[in-house]
Image 1: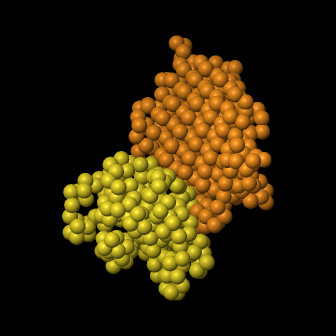
Image 2: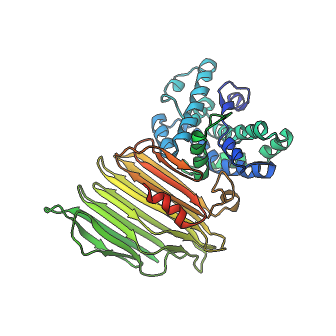
Image 3: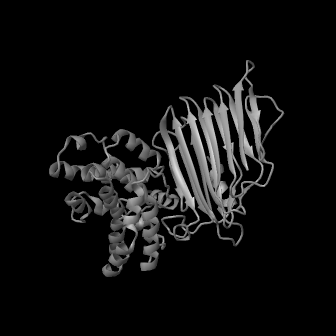
Length: 202
Length: 233
């Protein structure tokens, strides 16, 4: 449980703060401008990308084969920008985790692992791993919205607290999801192509 | 209505792709083209209004080494609710050692329809597959029913693409992280060894998959805009 809390803490030095999960691109296009549009974005993100990531964190926590999971998650992540963001966050998390919680299972992860697999291995319990992963799928973009749009932090925090993170985590433990997120994939690809100043890596 | 149909195409000694097995079952009616050549052309005709709620349809397609099949639809598919409110389902399964192009016309998810669609493809080392899906969320001014559409493709047992698309939850369809309020979503996957670069625009992209192949994705307000993107790869 403590591991899950540390991973979900925004002060965890895993490099997650440089990723907005598509929020920067959505904000740049005027798709997310205020609390209602942020709530809609986060709700969609949680039920799509959040569920997918949480399902793989749960499977990794159950001890399933990590190389097979890595290949299956690649097949469920058609956008190269999304694959690269997931692996960059996995690599950052792994770097910090090797010092904090060295283990043989951590070393069994594939090179540049997808972040949900790292979370699953570290947390080691399916529901807690899924919960951590589902929460991170919305907390990062929510905090990016405060920074990019100057939204009220109390209002944004209330939105995150109202999302069905626990329901998604329970559902993620049932079977390996394959839910796609076409709009998020297109936002991620467009973000990579965007010229000019970008504050976030994804 | 429960129906299962089967189509087998293989290469003959003259280098022609010939239909060896053609088992239609209403509403899955397979109509082969008369021309003989390196590519066999077969149209998939829905010979009864289908699928309705409660229907269960399955089609298996096998294409042998060196053979090539083009399987086309002739009309858009309307997913309709039945009187029972039951779920309808369709499964199309490809076993490919040659080349397959599967190009059905758009699928319209009408109000109150509840459908599950699955396309599964098992490819061997040199097999090639192209498959397209265009989903329309309801007819004009109509709220869509619900649809879960899954594509899973493997090559020699290893996963290439596995994507489930769920439409019909208004809160997700409207979300800019869901379907961004667009009425039409289209994808075209090409599984071959050709390397294509990434390209894209505001609501479309063409991207390389991790384990080989290319996926085009487009969101739009009408079928013409979306299929124009898919036609480009």
